[in-house]
Length: 428
Ligand code: MN
Image (tube, rainbow, N blue to C red):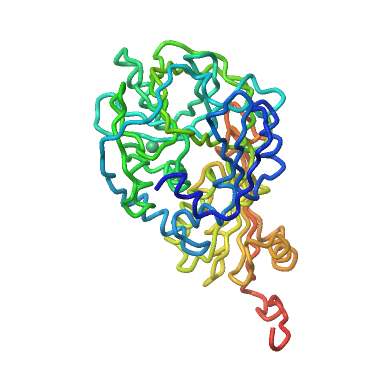
């Protein structure tokens, strides 16, 4: 269940053999091919031992294939993994190479205003300082010097562990894994409740095939198949400027004071594969959005018997816009679906609900449903001053206050239904 195994079975791969720089040159090619093939860079200027891989989660199809699911059944697979995490087996393992210094890694500098090289596909794994559970989540990491990185931590689970360690007067031990199977990356993005190790969720997605091993300098269990492991601590008493960094929306985020990681050591396989995620690219969006689609699907399914599909659309950054198709059974179902969607994904801003005859992967059909089935004075819901996302530049970014809009584009039940149906040609 390694990244190497996954790549062996992947045919949609482009390889680059010319010498390319980690600063802008590789990111530029990543941007050009965003949402397409997997890219492998074999010849990296100043880092001859490494290969860089990008786009392994760059399409919905690639991610779903990695968990043996399709676009109709992945919701249940993800929700089942969250509800039934499986403890992975632990085995002894020793990595081939040991290093002391972050400058050995081919970390990319992506955009013109970036303050330095950023690790973007690092899974940060920590153990609760007093309780016996781990947390795993992806965080952007700005390389500051040979031994230090800035880490952006939004107030969620890792933040709680960091705060609890701080209150005990301790640094928080962590390990960072880079170069993982797409299913592991999806698993760590599922956000189960605090206390559930996302690696156990990933193991459930992989039908129990994920193996872990122990770190050497910290008390943490890491995926045995990782390409690169960085061991260290989040310092209890040091904050630095982090950013500006390009986030999900493709805009620069603000600069904030964020904690510092001090590393102990780096361990790697021979000829390691360094995975890089383009900030604001498809891979970034899908890894964030896909698990949320499952959560939205799950919560609407509790109030409406037949939910056909949920998509967080690419244009909405796989974060702000949802399209939901339902089999409507009563007037008002569309509006209830809108409310359930807003309740299950707080960052959501605009929701469109359509009937089950609309293809939610086809933007034209969605627009057609709005054009022919929606009346603004009856079918629109506006929720003012709700809590939104810090990522939306048009919202009140400090307080995260936003306006939410729901569009019920399902067929109204007080008008003759046949008026709204698509005409068919016999044999079509
Ligand atoms: Mn967690």
